Image 1 (cartoon, rainbow, N blue to C red):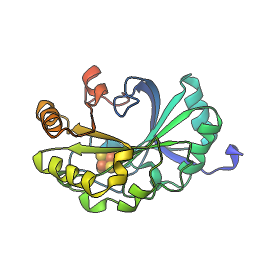
Image 2: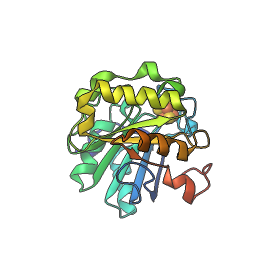
Image 3: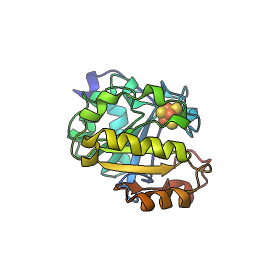
Length: 218
Ligand code: SF4
């Protein structure tokens, strides 16, 4: 079945420690797809905009299996830009993997296999991509899906707090607040969350503290 599917353009496949979400700290295989429809001001994976190689779903499955790791994250770029990502997710799930999809939040998530966990970015204004948020996605979130706000300053923080207030359904999900690396002071963000008693999960991009943040494949 997987052999009849078209290829997916892949930037890199590697094993690392999951640095974000409530899965952080676990070993993961990351499948990074090529291409993104957004241009966040602080993007740290611009190398994935164009670089990559077309790989069949079978070849991707084989590459993932070699790492001997149950957890897999499909990330980008923007994974949902490529049609064959949907059967890839299904194939990985059928192969016994737990699958996370990290998406920039501008494309519909409703065609993804419901067994997968979506990590949905909601782009804050300072990213320059706030206009691209597909708000309908907030009604499509399932129980284990998580929502992520990457926050660059107090205006972003206040904006994110406003979004949570306007969309009560969001409060059923794990909500992640993450400071923009090397831009937003983590302590200030932590203190705002505590002062407001906000029921969100503060996170740092753990992999950037373990390895050189400029390194690829970590
Ligand atoms: S959505 Fe992700 S990959 Fe695309 S520009 Fe923004 S940070 Fe970079």
